[in-house]
Amino acid sequence: MTDSTSDRTCIAKMILWPAVITLAITILRLVGELRHWGSPWFSASPGGGGAIIGISWLPILLGPYFALKLSRAGEGPAGYGKAFGTTFGGLVVLVLGGALLGMTESHPGFLTLVGFGIMLVAAFIPPIGWRSLGRVLLAYALAARVPVVVVMYLAISGNWGTHYDALPPRFQDMAFWKKFLDVAILPQMTLWIGYTVVVGSLFGEIVTVLLGRKPAGQAST
Image 1 (spheres, one colour):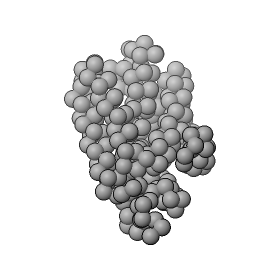
Image 2 (cartoon, one colour):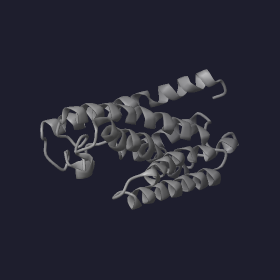
Image 3 (cartoon, helix red, strand yellow):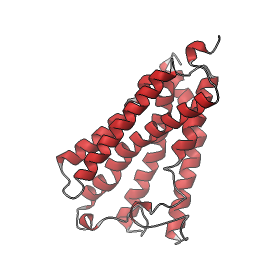
């Protein structure tokens, strides 16, 4: 991946079907909640109630899928030590951001924004060790989460009674745009982006190592 245009094209092709499947699961979950299909497959409670039908577990599968495709194409990491090191670094940053969010949950403010920002920064750490995988996962994360933001906009504005608009009591009296920013845009475009890249990278690297895939520099030896 040398030319920037071809680079973007290759990434778009690689994430196309995973993004389509992710969108289909998002729509299925929305329909299931609107029709009140039962647990454990669906839940309209705040946070999703641990429902099985959802997209948060997909990076565990798609990380290895992307990693193996890139490895076969000669786009593996220069070394797995650096790849794992940067991924664990991203995981530490992600956890720190989450801890800060937890500390400020009862009194959100500037530090809450810092926490979300830290979790977004976590997404850019794993690509230091495996650039191509990190970039693919970042593109996929955006493709997965932007539709969720759209669904949440519609659900919150229409009071659909799904987990997409099931809000804690302190959000009930907020103005719409403040509510939408706090419960949709910030988490989806920071926390979940960081989570997708870090978790996808971790599982992708584990699987490629277990399957004996060599780093890019050793692939031809």
